[in-house]
Amino acid sequence: MQRRSTRWMAALTGISLAMLAVAQSGAAAAVTRSEYCSRLGLQLDGAIQTKAQPGASASEIAEATALQDKANRFCAERKQAQGIRTYANALKLLGVTPVDLNQ
Image (cartoon, rainbow, N blue to C red; front, top):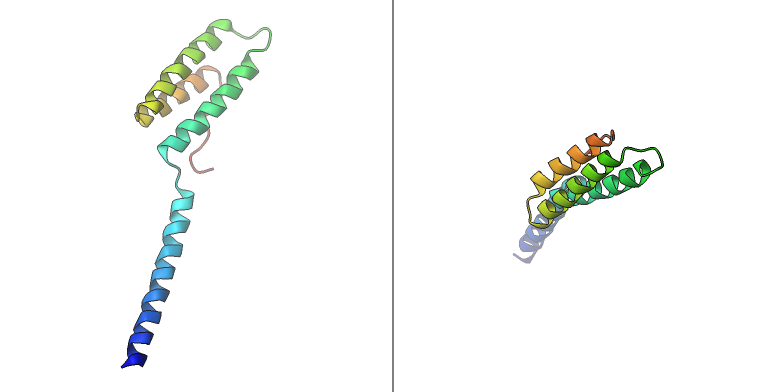
């Protein structure tokens, strides 16, 4: 009787470990909306600093900064989808392609 329960426990442990490994590999690849907000925010910061060189359009920089503030509020208020769209619009305004989720 002891052998059977030991075998079952070993089999269940093996299955559990295999399922855990699969779940962790899938979770590591997924990017949450919060993380995406952060990535786009950093990308926009860099784009604004790059565009702030002499000769850049001050109105575009001002508009992108206003959109950045709006996106920050959306992401802080747990409205990440709206924040992501706003960040993307600000980046496009500056002629920058937003980062891809799959990278």
